[in-house]
Length: 415
Ligand SMILES: Cc1cc2nc3c(=O)[nH]c(=O)nc-3n(C[C@H](O)[C@H](O)[C@H](O)COP(=O)(O)OP(=O)(O)OC[C@H]3O[C@@H](n4cnc5c(N)ncnc54)[C@H](O)[C@@H]3O)c2cc1C
Image 1 (spheres, protein in one colour):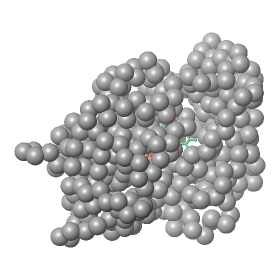
Image 2 (tube, helix red, strand yellow; image 1 turned 60 degrees about the vertical axis):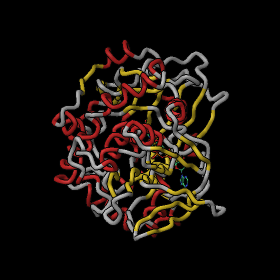
Image 3 (tube, helix red, strand yellow; image 1 turned 180 degrees about the horizontal axis):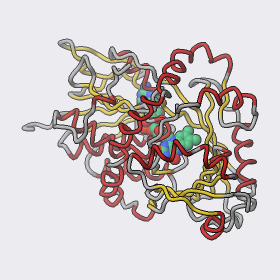
Image 4 (cartoon, helix red, strand yellow; image 1 turned 90 degrees about the vertical axis):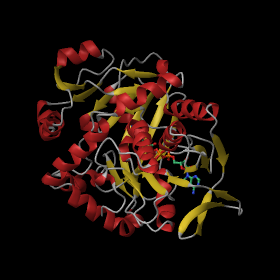
């Protein structure tokens, strides 16, 4: 580039800051805007998993048959805000279609194409941001209360193994050795060898955002509400209040809130949200050496800097309904069965909006209409995991360089 082009990234979550960092490396003058301070969206309070082993989509063969039972169970992994159901029907139909076996096989391989790159893409950034002490590549332990429930995961685990994911079976005795703090209620488990964990996902965003600014990037607080077109192309973003930010290239990385802006740019997209809850409690003597997934309870327990985070599950209810922290309480009660030393003294509840596409794949795509616009959202349960790789892929698309993988599966107009 003879003269640096400007790039505007909307959204300062884990995806937006990664996109900003890589665009900077490509020579763009980058501004990231967010209506809040960086990292205060869904990236703030997630489970901190670099879940490179999770290539199985959320919609799997048999998932729909389980839904009625889940909905009847107040402690179950899925809840629905019934008033939101009519608005969610088109998403749910696509979700159901994505769960057919041949689609699941295809989606898994398309997720693996991204997940396989995660450690290589994150490692240099983590080092440059001075975050090496805040990230561990130590594996996660998934535990099952019975051999029957382990067998119920056979297809899921086989799918992952066939896609090159290292999953190792462990016995009751090995679980006790690895995690002596767990209740002795688990019959068997698996170790997901390449899973990683961060000490605090919020601090990861802050560390990357600081690096971005140290390298000359600009963060600006503004809510983008519209765009201005010149010569048939979007050329400026309009902030609430009327300010305009001119750009050569634009990336929409607003997580669960991306649908509206994508629509304004001419790309309607079936993005919705899977709301998730957790509670983080100080250690108070409880011990946990690594991330533990209790498969029968659909909860994840993560040892973090500030304590142990217990949560997971999915609530379908859109972006505006108030949180129902009874969900977090229910998940925490399950967590206490798994790790009996957990005390809820001093705990903090949180809810986040997973940005979810019905087929569990992110949108990492140029606009079919405007060659100066790209989209990076819809990472669902895997936004922290896929952040750095999304940055690399978007930067390739925006710069017109060849992407390292086939980008067709992640196109915004795939539905
Ligand atoms: C309970 C739970 C557990 C999870 N655990 C994991 C995990 O272990 N591993 C994993 O990989 N993922 C996990 N996830 C998913 C992960 O947190 C998300 O996929 C990820 O945070 C999405 O990042 P993002 O940058 O796309 O969105 P966000 O972090 O939500 O950032 C989007 C930003 O866009 C801004 N924005 C929105 N609209 C506008 C606008 N109009 N103008 C300006 N700014 C705007 C928002 O303020 C926000 O800061 C979990 C999610 C939940 C809820």
